[in-house]
Image (cartoon, rainbow, N blue to C red; front, side, top):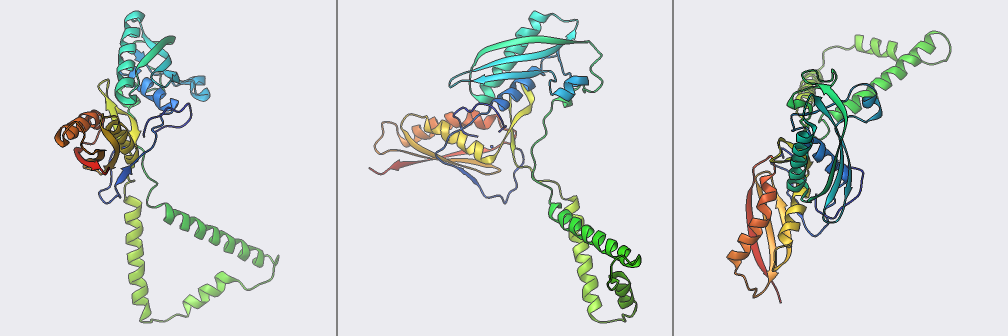
Length: 324
């Protein structure tokens, strides 16, 4: 999800999946929530409070000390946050602090799944109301995250072209040295031009021209092709925008973890596709609960997580009895 920080046991998945992707399967594993991911959720939630302003200009931008920022300590069952904020002036600090605590606590509980043990709000800056930092946008787009995407499809072509240009530079340098009698050798460019000048019409030129058209069209398509989205957004009631981005395999692991916590379930395996989340659970043969009750219990455990995703997916639960 994010990098750096302390790890906590929990499973990890972002918007827009390609229909022909291989489904991600989540089996036994551990969900790891990094402190930086918790910090980003806390900062995004704090920015939904009208009194909180973003400050990223001046030395703060150079030193990475922009506001708001959060120092996070993640425990096994809770999380503690020191949140540094700048408030619009004038405002009632006590009311702003209460609103920040409510928004951040709800977001951490909804997104991270850990209750807020302690939140310390430190007001370290102010900004006159109606006069935001020149370098910090004041609208909602200032903190709206962008979904992670795959590398552009044109990257291989760009790499090949860069190697070709390096080759051209080498040939040009060689020709320059030959022209100034620095090195000996036959001039490649002059010989190539003379060879082309002596060419006459040949049937193979039709095929060569057609191949050039095809290659050119492919390059145009690759250049215009949008980058593939690799994650799905996860939001909360505290924000209208996604706060964190998850890979399909992360969503699968989270669902498997929640399904595995249902009483009577021995193991759970989740498959995530762009339209559906399928949870296969195994339970002990002859369990006290019937198959229908087990399906509803697993669905109730998984659906709250799926509801937080930006992309709508249906949930299907399949229950199998483990062999004795």
